[in-house]
Image 1 (cartoon, helix red, strand yellow):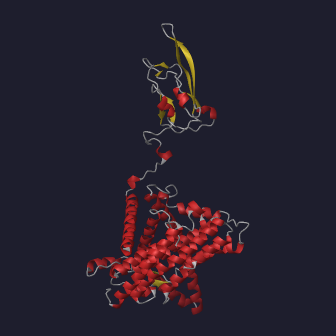
Image 2 (image 1 turned 60 degrees about the vertical axis):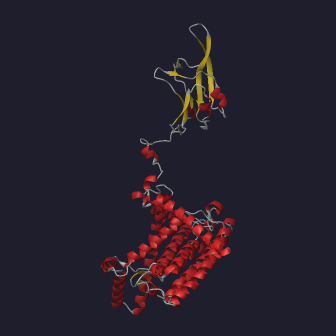
Image 3 (image 1 turned 120 degrees about the vertical axis):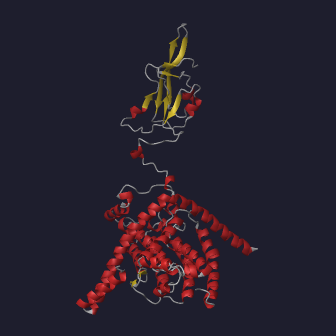
Length: 158
Length: 358
């Protein structure tokens, strides 16, 4: 019947409109749901989501040891050449030569925070940090060396 | 307690004792004009900040919160900014029409204030065909929009204006029929008499189902008539940049913006007058004590309270529903609202003939 369908469609429209308006009325009356961050004012208490990607950093232990073996997997994974790894050869106590990282160069100005380097890393040497206030007055300050001076490879990381 | 009608009559008496009748009339006209403009400016400021705050809270945001306490002076600051901006007239535009259009929009919005009863015995012009006057004048606003769209010499403006024309012409029908429902129940076109007929209950309560249906249709139709979302095809930001006021800037744009909000206010005031009893307080049958408490609240507060409630409902629509396509818009009017309101008129006539209303 045409008339039944007609009335049904009106009823359905009314019902779905009611659902929508109920949702907005809920948000209107429940101010604790507000997601606005008053950013520069709440810098001290700012809580970022766990998966927020600010920049790539290399983790160092208290003994100034990192986990980067200089395998260049991250450099190969990077889609736009943000990472450049300069390697050197360490002489082990037995007199063997061993490849190690000399400089882990990271171009923050190129990085798109795609996370591919972190996924490519076999030893979990690098991770995404949550710092995001990166503005500086000189572009050269955005080119960073991630391994701290004098740091060496952690024991047992191959 | 001082009421608006007492102030008005004391001013009238004072003027009469000092001036000749012709001068009294002139001075009173000037006072009314100044008061209307002051009300406009105030309403513009209040409604803009209200809209922005309602929008923000409905979208889980904070909204303006920097200028003044809780951002309440934001619209004042914006108005000052608009006042000092340059009003550019495009080189290809029809200059006379282009500059005239915002004033026509403003004047039609202003004319609608005349028959409104703001408080008990406080009306600018209580003419005996108030409802007819309101429906006739409110349809003039489309002329300003068409004028603006046509004279801008811009495809977006013209498209927006044409859409607005189609929209207002169609939605006027169901808005008119919804208003007719109350006219049938009251038997009068005079707004003060319509308010008086609601002394023992507002039409939305004592008009049974037809009055309720008419009220819903009226709200939908006036939302469309004032070109507000979800029916804001005339300015559709995402498709037509800003529709008919794409080319306007500075104070000329502000006049259009103000006229939109004043139109919202006037249609909500008319809705409040017709369906929610105007300045009549809320009474429940035989609850004498409750009714006395309600009578203590001034009539102007009742009127503005109801009006702002309806304005809030219209804002609620705007920030809940997505914009309709032009064919969906016309579908809604010609296939749904118009048949329903026609059927509703028959229903309400039966009720009026058999005196089923209170």
